Length: 260
Image (cartoon, rainbow, N blue to C red; front, side, top):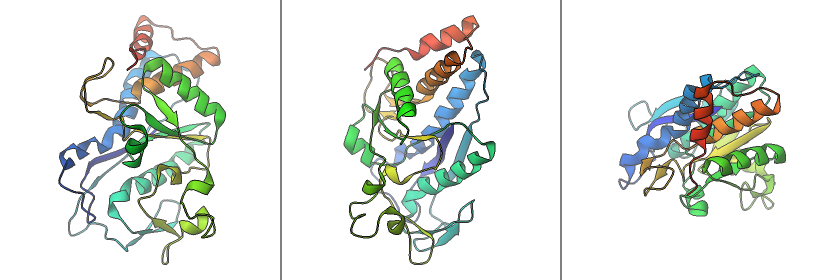
């Protein structure tokens, strides 16, 4: 489980507009969901290990801030040209995914308040689900339906990473910058690919609710903690393990909130 944890996101040198910037403390919502999940995991009797990775940073302007045009080196040695410092989440997630590989995981799920585009697509009623694994998509979607934390699967095709992919040689060419091996741009969520049995949840549309709902209050929602707890519980049950304690049973019931 990987959570993006930008504790405050001003946009850095590529400064965000002042409207709604006060809400950008919510850019750590992916990390908060992972921490929330781990606070509940002791109530489950799991036959497999679960590892949480919290990728945390702060994105602020200043004398030492990244600048557009800088080239940085990622954890795996890949060089990346920064063209927009307000797309920091992609670099944070990239390093977290590289770090997670050392554990040789069977499955990786990351949560991130990554794009404004997912809110345009889905409003505030569902988070975007990206994966090329149909079985994993079905597992997560079933857990989402049971907890009321809705997911909507969006395409993760190579061909749609950029509108002009076919004209400019495909996604690998589009990601190549003039000085770095990869160009860091404010592109769609589907550019965040891990090369693993992996799912990406873009929770930018659901981590903060604009209104009271039956299953969540206005403001920060904790989206993802209940969903992942239910998903992991189902995986444990499928392997023959049971949720054994009264506290665990209460935790599972708590995930089944009324749907919006």
